Image 1 (cartoon, rainbow, N blue to C red):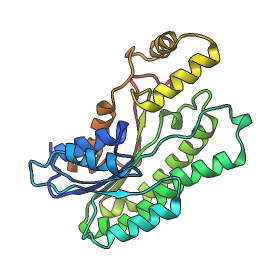
Image 2: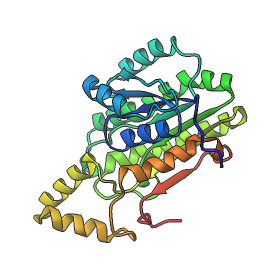
Image 3: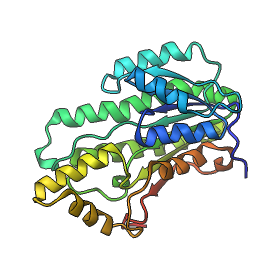
Length: 262
């Protein structure tokens, strides 16, 4: 099985913490050069120092705020002028705030749509010509299991995640002929700062302790535990490798079996 990413260049978004950082670390261990993307330069510098460089990898970063689509597009345009090719793009950013969909304001949908789908699209459009040139491309979107089964209390997120999945499937159909695959990784409950926030909000809403809330949520998962970011990263990293060349246009839940549908 060919898992070697030596001489491949990967752009990993939201890569200074949580799942994004774990993916950057995993891809570097497989030999890839990593371009980190996030808004905090200090964290970007720290993360870059943690990446494996034992195979001569050269890591760098782009400072960009995903809440500002124009900023992301501009920063990427400047960066790509310095690059001969990009082989891997990992689209990943923090999810929208929770809450019932009936209470969501129009701006919440628009902001989330821009932050997720529009940014993903701009990034993909920018790197696809370079992927075509090299004959190798992997676009991997970190979304959510809500693509398959909407999650309670995450109305805006459910809506936007579904849109991103449909966009990705359409893109996969158009790009497969060029040796470029587009796939989605769907994390379930994963031990990140976002999950901690969800647990705290749920505990407060239900008037029970954080620990009791955590136990209640874990009981819904066949594995009876939350995922570690590294476990989600392993799935994303595999999709980035030559071994996954014939996997295209799919949604892969990494959720310990929680999703109820097939």
